[in-house]
Length: 112
Image 1: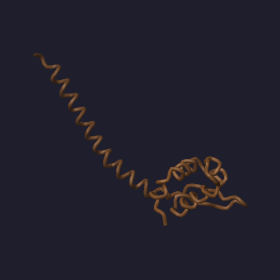
Image 2: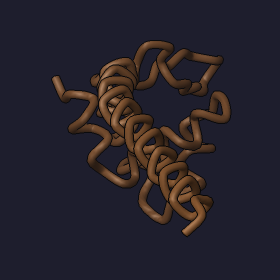
Image 3: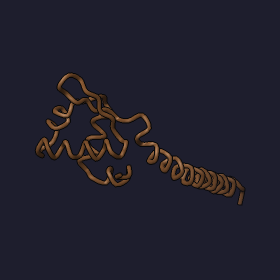
Image 4: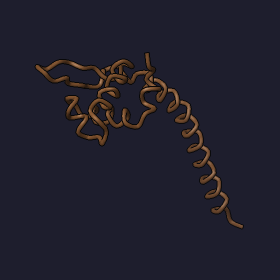
């Protein structure tokens, strides 16, 4: 089984995910956006489906694709961890910058 990260490493699959973020699309609608063959798009959709990133349902003769509700949880969890790491450090940096500005103002306001 392909991991979420592996399947998102391909730029075509990332673009498919972006398109599906706006809503459900048939395989034909997805394929219309790319200058590659329909079988190639079908292979990309299969990889995304096998990785659990997208789900498919039958609608008469058409296959309709949508993002899986929890398909990007692995990526979301990683982003939350990274954001928390940098968010705390950026907050601390902002605090230090504010202290430096305050110290400069205090120094500049003192009579000489």
